[in-house]
Every structure is written in structure tokens, then in C-alpha cells.
Image (tube, rainbow, N blue to C red; front, side, top):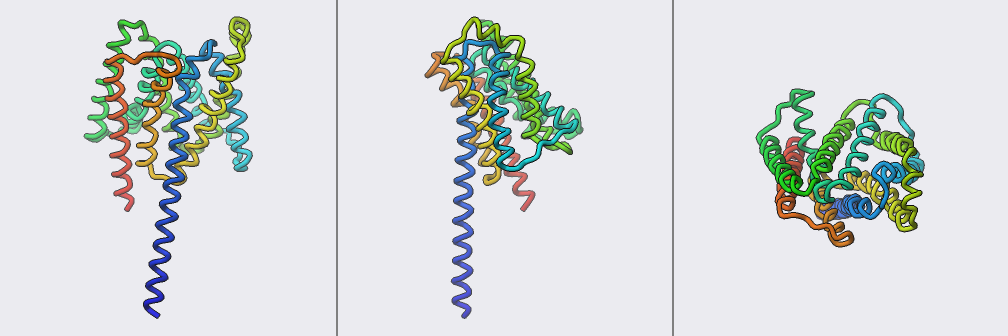
Length: 304
């Protein structure tokens, strides 16, 4: 009797471990798909001959359809309050500044400098909530700022300073978006819908001007991919992935985005990456990734 009970417990343990492994694999694939979708932004923005205002506005229209459809399928209600509106404003500034940065500087500079977002979260938590950063946070900040200096060193000669500054603004506002999730009444999908509506409306004055100067079928094909895949499906995949995997796995998997983004641009657009930018990318991405992983591991240990 005891032997059968023991065998039954072992069978249940094996089944439980199998389910965990399956869920982990499924979640990792979702996060990987999300990062791949996000990474297409650089090359698609470069290939579209319209202004950043038009690109962001039209991209947002397609994104509304994708995210709105996802909310309907999940029967997720739309939330409207001050927190949702504030999150929408931050997300709008983040999106506009990133598109503009990608147009004005290299795709590598734009995505990697936006990836400074975790460092801005550290600084904002220190400034707003008086949460003094630990040793890991301070080291990460120093390394990231060293990486930023590498980008600026290269941009001085290439005339890309404005684009680099906009990319940093994108990283700063993205940090605010991430912090909004911690506030009472926050709802990411609802903020995204409102943000997309704002972007679509703000861009109206320049739509017809851009269409009249460069109305090409390829641009609309790229625009559809940008709105549906890069700005719609990416968020859905990320949301699904985080239901199954730990922050450690998500952090490690997501670092493929700032690496794959400039590679796609180099292959399909022919944009070269300077030596200083490569050094800066290694410093920024490496510091942010290591810090995220260490913080996630510490959090998991404290919860056990």
C-alpha cells in the first residue's frame, strides 16, 4: 500500500515537473516572438519614406485594431482614469521620440539608447520615492552612462546628436510607462489604446502632405507590418509570455531586441554600425541585462 502511494506521489511529481517545463518553454517562445516583433521596428521605419509623425500616426491606427481585438477576445473591459491617461501621454511621447530618433540617427543608436529605460527607473525611484539604489544599481548606471558617451562621441562627427537625444527621451518616458503599472488604477492595454488614438489624431495635419510626395505601395505594406506586427502583436506576445516565465527568463530573452534590430537594418537597409557605437551597445545592453537578471534573482530568493 505504501509502495503504491509512493509511486503515485512520484508520478504526480513527474507530471508537475513536465507541466512546468512545458509552460516555461511556451512562455519563453512568446517572449522571444515579442522581442523579434519589436526588433523589426528599426528597418521598417527606415524603409518608409514618410515623416515620423505620419509613421507613428498610421502605425497607431493598425495597432488599435490589433490591441482592441485582443481585448475583445479576452473580454477585457476598457479602463479610463487619470492613471490610464498619464500612462497614455508617456507612451505617446515614448513612441514619437523613438520613431523620430530612428529617422535622425542610426537604428542601433535609437534602440540601444532607448534600452537605458531600466536605469531611468532606478533614478526615478530614487528621486520620487527616495529609494536609494544599491551597489548593483550604481554600477549599472555608471556603465550605461559610459556607453552613452560612446554614442555621443560617434554622433558628434556624424551629425546625429538630435536623434541620440530623442532616443534617450524615449528611454526616459518608457521608464515612466513601466512605473505606471505600479500605480493604482493602471491598465496597460487601455493606456495603449488611448495613446494610439492620440498619435493617430496628432498626425492628421501631415498625412496628406507625406502621401502626396511619396505615395507608394511598398510604404503601405511596411506600414501594415509596423502597426500589426511591431506595435500590436509584440505587446500581445509579451503579455502572454509573462504569464508563464519568470522575470529572469524574460529579461534574458528580451535582450535579443537591441541586438537583432541593428542587424536587420544593416542587412536590409545597408546601415553601418561604427566601432564606438558597438562598444556603447555592449556597455548599455550588457549593464541593463545583468542588472535586471540580478534583481530578478534576488527578488525570487526573497520570495522563497
